Length: 185
Image 1 (cartoon, helix red, strand yellow):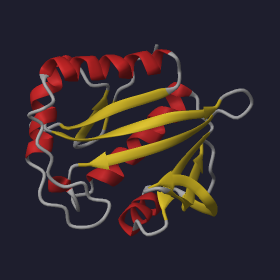
Image 2 (tube, rainbow, N blue to C red; image 1 turned 30 degrees about the vertical axis):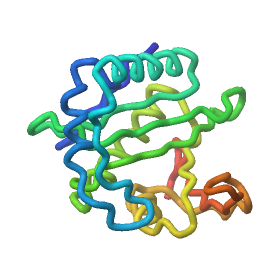
Image 3 (cartoon, rainbow, N blue to C red; image 1 turned 90 degrees about the vertical axis):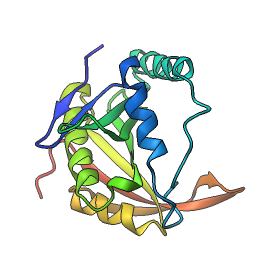
Image 4 (cartoon, helix red, strand yellow; image 1 turned 90 degrees about the horizontal axis):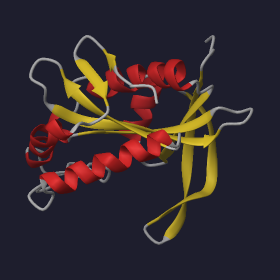
């Protein structure tokens, strides 16, 4: 498997390692109270032991080895803080090379440009190293911050998929944003 890693001016995106446990738990423990529906807010990492973490990231490696899911930690260069993660999930290879990407930034790092910077870098990495042709973002219709992030990171709105995602005991609509490897706009 390709060792996925990319650096930006302020960030390093790479697979989690067992040595990241402390920074990972600090990221969760320092979250602020939730400010809106899609902000998970504070989460106590105490129940998640180092053994749990090591097993958790081992699962990431296994799914990556199968070319199913790739999960990268997002780390700030200046102090090594884990500020979130980015994942890409293969939808279909064959003649499509099509994937879905998700992202999560801890709320204490909101509104500092880290989301846009990490999504742009991850997109470049997933196109170049994993040879995806199309990457989609599937966003809840009422998640305006994520919609703004998608647009600022260069993704184009494509459509609304009706009753597409099962959440909260019901099927909900999702907005689809996409980027192709060779977009020319």
